[in-house]
Every structure is written in C-alpha cells, then in structure tokens.
Length: 219
Image (cartoon, rainbow, N blue to C red; front, top):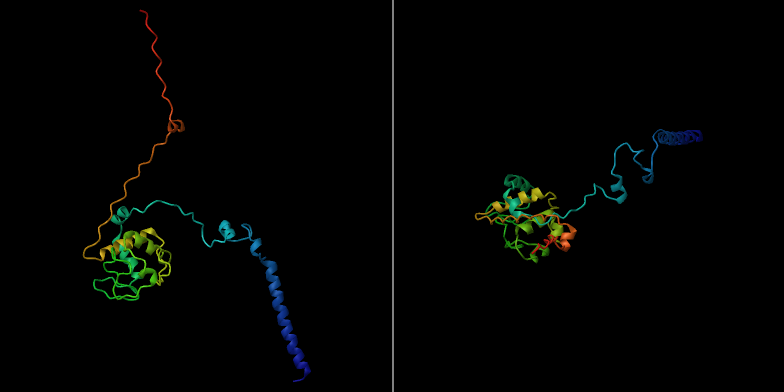
C-alpha cells in the first residue's frame, strides 16, 4: 500500500463528510427549523397552549378554587365501596387489609379509621408520622391520601397520592368497611342559605316613606 492508497482513503472520508453536510443543508432548506423564540401558532403543525409555554407550565394552568369545607357526611354516604376496593389494589403490595393481617412495608390497614396515627405496635414509623399525634379521622385520611408528602413532610411512604376527590372518598369508604364495628358517618353539613340580594340603600338603612297626613276637616 503506497502513498496513493492513503490519499484515496482520505478522499473517500472527506467526500462522505461533504455528502452528509450537503444532505443536512438540503434538509434545512426543504424543512425550515425554528428556534424556541421563533415558534408561533403559524409555523407549528400542532396546536399548543402558548400561555402555558410562556409561563413555563407543562400542563394546562388550573386556577385553584376554594370550594369550602368537604361535606364528608354527604360524600361518604354516596361513596362506592366497590370502587374503593379497586383503588386499594395499588396498596396491597405494602399493606394488608384482612383482619389480623401482619404489617408489611406499611402498617396493616384493618380498623384504620379512627386509629391513632402511628399507633400500630411493632411497626417502625417514620418520625413524620410517629410524632404527628391525633387519629386517622376522615379529614386526616382525606388529606394524607391526597398527598402524603405534603400532609406529613418527611414521611417515607413513596405513594404520590390520589388527585381525584372521588377516588379518595371511595377509598376512605372502603377503609371504613375494614372493621367489625365501622366508625359512624359524620352528619352532612347544614345547607347554606343564600342571602337575598339587598339594595345598597336598604343595607345602609333608609327612612320609609311616610303616608301623607290627612287634611283637617272643617269643624
């Protein structure tokens, strides 16, 4: 192999690189690309939520609305225990649900409603739950199931939580059924009567129109 052979090899390599560069340039000419700042509704093939992109949000922005206190009495009375049993299947790898079930990665869940938080003997709770105090009331279970990490910061439970209220209520109703003496359901909240709109003048208080005085009669 002489010097001519290596010249040929170098020529082939250079030619291949030039062909690749030519193909890339031709692709840019046929399909123009845009930087992040150049993307608009006109030069994209699919619809985007541009407000979400500009704000840095990865999903549709949802405004949090305060709907007032949760009516556990009303919701639990209408809950679907069967649907809650299907939800609990996500948890059986760590928890047992039958009476007398042993602790697993998580504590046994039989008779959990109304039980002291961190109150299962022999289970090694994280300090977040072991020192919390209180009991697993409907309110406590509702908050914990929504987001364990937010409700008990520092908990070792890896479950992210249930975002849907319906799933949380159904699961709590099923957990309530795991007992020989289920906890009583709370009373529904009293209906809030909407106040009738009042005129501003009436709200401040106005003097009622006086009836015209009768003219004196002749004696």
